[in-house]
Amino acid sequence: MAIERPIIIAHRGASGYLPEHTLPAKALAHALKADFIEQDVVLTSDGVPIVLHDIHLESTTNVASVFPRRARDDGRFYAIDFSLAEIRQLRAHERRKPDGTAVFPTRFPAIDGLSGVPTLAEEIALIEGLNQSREHQAGLYVEMKASAFHRNEGQDLPGAVMTVLKDSGWANRTDLVFLQSFEPEALRQLKYEHKTVLPLIQLIAENAWDENGSVDFDAMRSDAGLDAVAEYADGIGPWLMQLYSGPNDEGEARLTDLARRAKERGLLIHPYTFRADQLPPGIDSFEELHRLFFEDLQVDGVFSDFPDQSRTLSECFSTRP
Image 1 (cartoon, rainbow, N blue to C red):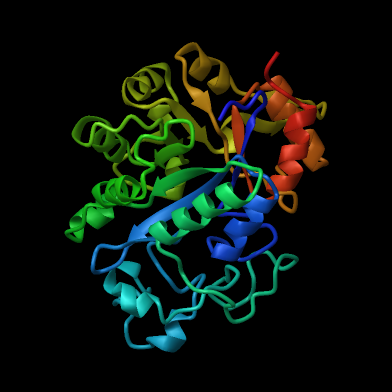
Image 2: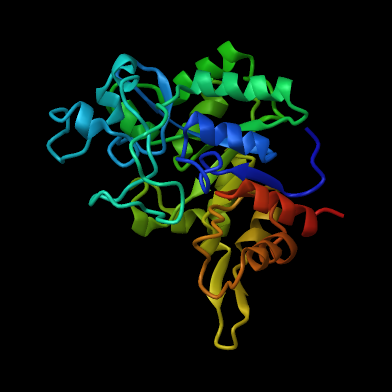
């Protein structure tokens, strides 16, 4: 799939319009001509990869109503504590805060779910079917969520993902699949143990988020850190504020040198997350945000909640000659 412009990755599907990681959100992302559609993957208790952003269920499903006594001592409902048959009983809804209100109140209403939680295999079948029935080819962009957590629970998340990709015929589709993780060890496992030929993307968080306590993301952004990433990965997925650090006193954009240093090492750059309803400080419009990243920073693609808007802007602000 040759694309002569920055790629647009539908972040959790067309999540600006429909509840994240539901099959309707993925179908809409395809209809909006996203180049890639993201799948965050966790495992059920019986080892089935399902598409869900968190290792917990309560923020985006009705699990507390269906299985009120199944929370752990911390009050959270962990996907890995439920079988696929039990997950099938849940309905997914727009992301909610702990108090039950919507995280994004102007988006799709946070009503009881209209669809369920899909498996990775089901989502691949949907995208493959749409690739056949529509005049548009969309790829997969799979993130393994909390591989170390799964390993501590006795499950092999990278291995389970690779099994589904092999069974579905996508394990060698290097132009249509990216694999990503915040955990270097998961990517190394894919590269050296599973010997995948698929491109690997090292996601970069902030240490303060405690995304993975064993990874120093500040060090990862250093020259030595990027050298290490380039040994096992094909690109980085930084938080957009690691490339743009806000306006200076004159209101001008302050850009870091992370993009330049990554490109010097041959790494792709796919920052996250572009949201028309949640602009970074100092940015007045979605158009301005894309111009900054596509023209000034020369990134190779972006994760967007609004893939249609981002695709239109990618065609306006191409990083490629």
